[in-house]
Image (cartoon, rainbow over all chains, first blue to last red; front, side, top):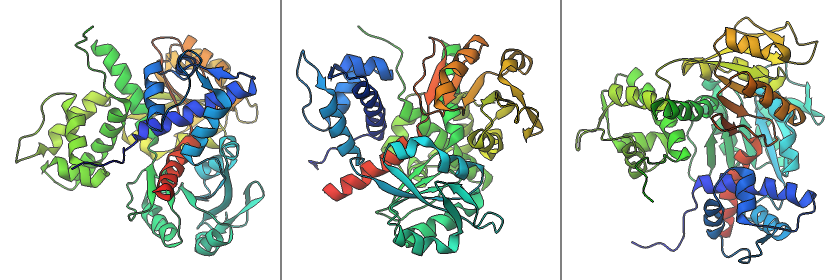
Length: 214
Length: 214
């Protein structure tokens, strides 16, 4: 069976994010063109990896000249779908939810937090960030519609994660990031990313372990 | 040039973490053997991917029978270097640092938070989690030695990230996770993971974008 659609590896997508950050910095510094070696050196991958990642999306750059920074950045942002803005809800107004709400990196990339929700009566009505008041999770459906929210970040305890996912899916959310240390299920057509904070440490211990075994 | 050492992709390492979580759940439920299809179904990858990931580390399982849950879990934990415990420092006692300190998923995987550090005089001396008092970042070198800390998590503002990395490296830290939205440099022999929270959202928008373009 042949398929004409090439599946882009998730690792490539993540690296495109990283490349675009470097390109933004280069643009700010007034750099006009960069080579794959420049990108590679600054983000810690090989030049071949940079070329391979970009090759999924067509022909870029000129041999011996490199890539035009502004053009490549614009194109990568289009690929990533961040040539536009996205409205985001945060579910869970604990320490993690608060940290995410105040995280400076979102707004800069076009992600606007438009709602924060919790069950805790003590938290409802409190201002979290950007003048957003915490609302009860009962309000999720109408708030998502009203504020045109497409993405949601889950920062609730593990035991509440699936319940929250179900509410979000019913409310029309299309992409979910789950920080709760609990596997959750979403129906087809809804994209889910499970962020496991311990797994981040495990990549480090894997590397350290390899060093010891060498 | 030939090399006998096979480079294991980072994505494989991350998936091993995910597989091991599923295996832990299976073990708790009293399940003795699982197939690659069982693992695949429960973590959202293909059975071929599971087999390929495990094949980096040797022969596992028996055709038609599957993998012994306890054995495979033990082996994956050994590969990941989490058949032992690791002591971890958190730098930055803001919302994110506090959330990380209280995150239940670390202890469960053998990561013990042994120190929290900040510059803010209002935070020094406060209890963060597990009876840990916030100490001034000046105390990092001696605290790391005293508590046998190998890993560190950075949750400080972008402008302070490199300074903190330098202190950690000098103090003998071998693995660093950086949550600050700022690229930092480490010398050879120190492992670094940059966790970009916006990049997590960008994988979602990439997927949603692809859907639209179909």
